Image (cartoon, rainbow, N blue to C red; front, side):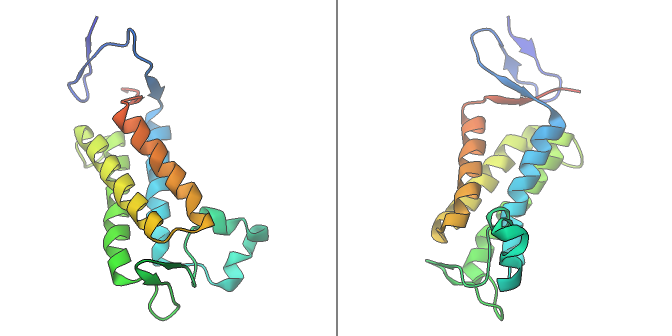
Length: 159
């Protein structure tokens, strides 16, 4: 029997559907991680920081000086090439706004899927254009977010 969701107005039927009821805070945290992956391009790691925690920081902070891609090279004086910023900044903003929408703060709840999808697509394009081993985790993250959105497998719990 379809039920009416009080937050987004979509009729849902849980019978026959494998839906993942996620904690609102967990989903917001996942979306914040997506914002981090894009926004970290504004502060690339230098050589010393790349060795922090035995080199593990490099895998969670995917941007570093010397990264090369189709759009250019990240250098200390210039940072990420301007065309890369056109993907990184809106991607980070979309993920951050999606997290706020999930939490019901300042952004309508019904926008969260659109914002999360836009952030994931922008970030995925950016990571592919600068493809390197340290971009695998953000790419996998974006694919997971897009899968959850398109399959409608993720449904935030209504408070």
